[in-house]
Length: 150
Image (cartoon, rainbow, N blue to C red; front, top):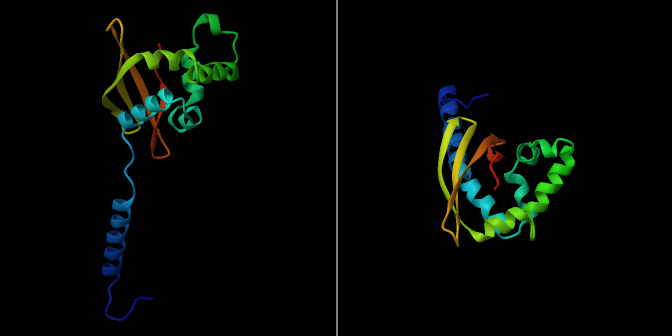
């Protein structure tokens, strides 16, 4: 029931204004570049439990261990191997600790996928390696699905 003198159009307009105000107050979704930067910082600080919202572990594990020498390794073991490489004195964490890492530009492939270029610069040799982090938007956040680790 609408109060006398108040049109339905006015109420709909007011609802739209309120919805826009609520949306404007919600925190913005971090960009793919920001998510990769946060992920790299978490690996460097040895914050393994906190990386899980940033990475599709199944996808990255399958991609990283796709070589023929890992054919007989089941996915759960590939995931454990990857997690071990990210933590403590693991290979990835050690390599990333020795490198200067520059998270470069993001490129949107479509509304739900993007790539972020990351440069790894060896501090002693000054040799620079490039990597593309592939991202998918899931549940209003960007998640890493594939990247070249070494």
